[in-house]
Length: 200
Image (cartoon, rainbow, N blue to C red; front, top):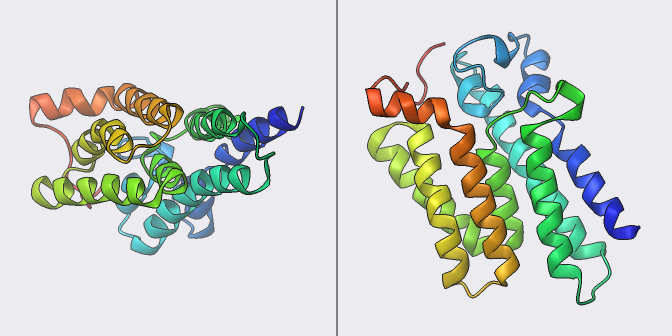
C-alpha cells in the first residue's frame, strides 16, 4: 500500500499542467488552442511571453524531479526502492502525458523527463540537458533536440553505471517521447518544423 501511494501521488503530481496554469495566470490563450497545440514551454514561448514559458519549463521539470526525490527520501529504504523509484518516474511522466485534471490532454514531456533524470542522477540530467542545448543551439529546433537528447539518455544512464531499472526508465521515456513527437518527426522530414521562438 505505501508503494501504491507513491505511484498514485506521482501520477497526480504529473497531471498538473503548468502550461495551462501559467498561461491562465498571464492572461494568455490556452496553449492547446494555438501553434502546435502542445501544452508545453516551447508552445507557450510562441506567445512571446518568455516569463510564462520559463515558468512552464521550471514547473514541468520540477514536478518530475519532486516525485522521484520524495520517493528516494521518504520511501522505505529496502530492496524494493529502486523498482519503486522507477515506477514513480514512469507514473509522473504518464501523468504529464495524460493528465486526469485536463481531460487527459497533456504535453510531450520533455521538461518533465529532464526533471526525472536530474533526480535519478544530476549528472545524467545534465548530460541530457547538455545534449539538448547543443542540438537546439545548432539547429534551432526544439523537437529535434529533444529527440536526440532522449535517445542518448539510456546510454548516459548505462555509462554512469546506474541500476538497470534506471536505464529502463530512460529507455521508456525515450520511446514515449518519440511517440509523442510523431507529428514533429513528419514535419522534420518535410522541412516544415518550426524554429524555437517562432510565433504561433
